Amino acid sequence: MYYNRVDISGVDTSKLAVLKESEKMELLKKCRQGDREARKKLISGNLRLVLSVIQKFTGRNENADDLFQVGCIGLIKAIDNFNIDLDVRFSTYAVPMICGEVRRYMRDNNPIRVSRSLRDLAYKAMQAKEQLIAKNQKEPTIKEIADMIEAKQSDVVLALESITDPISLYEPVYSDAGDTLYVLDQVGDKNDDVNWLDEISLKEAINALQPREKNILYLRFFLGKTQVEVAEEIGISQAQVSRLEKNTLSKIKGQI
Image (cartoon, rainbow, N blue to C red; front, side, top):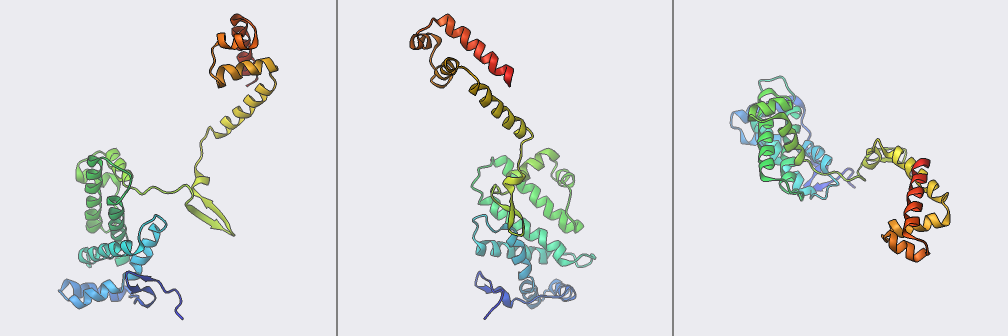
């Protein structure tokens, strides 16, 4: 019996090797010397890292095998571009590269239509981000990305946001003792309480009206009849309907 077994893209992840940091650095040095066998071992030894990264993107109707394969492309790019002379853990550099590759794939398959110019800017920003990560071994700021591609910071933010995957309002963000907190629970409107109280006040004001006043409002605003039509239906003059309507609305406004 296998525990924690996950088969993805034909790979049994429960049997994947896990390399120590020292082993990774040694293999990376050999890779720089053209050792293809060392490169294969390095890729195989970091597939668990790819698996852990793509789990962030689960639940978005994406095929797990496809995400895993795309993540492996990001891993290979990280291996080929990692600077072994800097005092940085390989995973620190590889994770953003893998995430970037997966996000690019999901962006290109995004069902939400984004203008070509915005997509092009986003693509340039993503490329610049990867280049800056490769150069500085850390996550760049929006200003650094904007300066590199000679664009406004606000435009870069808008472009990157436009290719971000939409999240369901029912996406769980926290769970404790069976009580799950969803995105919907964190979305609010500062006017919610005011609107709620106004609605209660409006109902109370209408309930306090006389039957004829309620009838006039119903005919005028729910059925859309003119004052002349209302007058004919209830048997009074149009002037009386106009006066009653005005007084009724004033009464409601006064109570609210």
